[in-house]
Image (cartoon, rainbow, N blue to C red; front, side, top):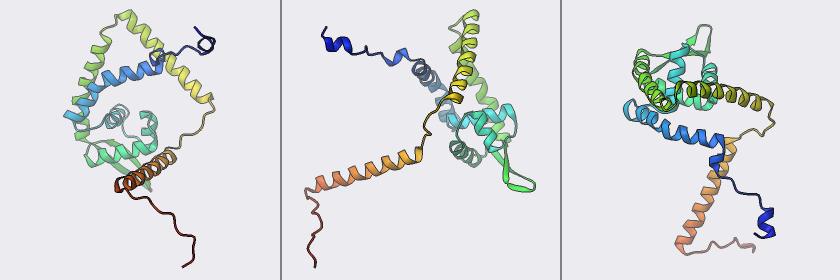
Length: 199
């Protein structure tokens, strides 16, 4: 081992990180829920989350729905618009202030929930079936403590605010620039700079 190797910290795989492992578990087991939602019921997993929240909590305002579903308002609004178009969710304006609306499940939306929820419950139960009762209880307790601690960390953290619009615009600009370069390369012609001579 060289001195340089000794000074280099050991590389740790992503598998050592709890959040990555939880994300991978969700990706694998959650894929079954996605296939049910999209393939059989014609909704996205995000739309299913909103349906489940409305089924368990009743009518909500859009901000309340976003909070309970733990989604930002823009994504919630987009998903709600899709659910309204599919006639699974209804919008009702409040008397005296039409800017305020209440969101609730339509009879069709409730029927979808009544059919899909037992299927999702069965997937979760089968997954948890690999743990005995004591392990399941300890796991549930650990999740509760991790969730509470994560919320405390977020409340105390000083982090930059995400600006998805800026990053999306930068990516679009970069893609447009690359497209222009590729088009020029394919044509085999160089773009001449404008002449500095007066006409």
